[in-house]
Figure 1 (cartoon, rainbow, N blue to C red):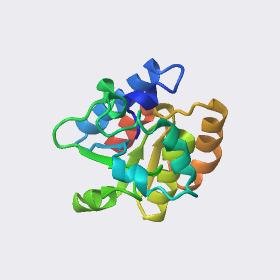
Figure 2 (cartoon, helix red, strand yellow; figure 1 turned 180 degrees about the horizontal axis):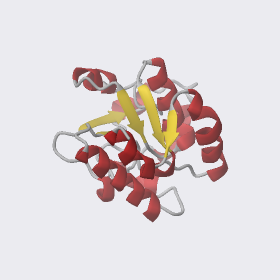
Figure 3 (tube, rainbow, N blue to C red; figure 1 turned 60 degrees about the horizontal axis):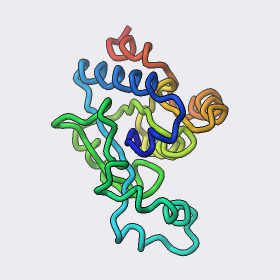
Figure 4 (cartoon, rainbow, N blue to C red; figure 1 turned 135 degrees about the vertical axis):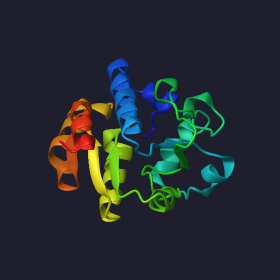
Length: 181
């Protein structure tokens, strides 16, 4: 989630992160799993819909031009780019579900388990892990394919909070999980 050019650029070291994310995508594809992408991007109407009390509206207001739907900064990074048949949704809030039809698309495909990775751990990951758990999905978080601008926050969430909503594993564990061993 949010593996888009402008968000990836917020992090200091991205080469290993993108490699692990690409490996995870390839592993899931190889096992016949559905790949989905969630990206944040705004149209004029989205920006105008934020009420004056919205913290998100204030944060986006300063960077709204950089997060335009048609901007290269909101395109999914080429190293983890979507392929035909992948789910792609555009969101205008932090979590993956509240402003998208992601839940409907997943349920229509019979998906009951989500393997989540994204930027940032304290934003999209936290909101989506909690919401997915509330929606009764089995949640698996790929800790090493997820990052946050604050590494200590990432560590705290992946070690202390996310295990309450699902399983936290590494990309190296993924093949064994998908093969049932």
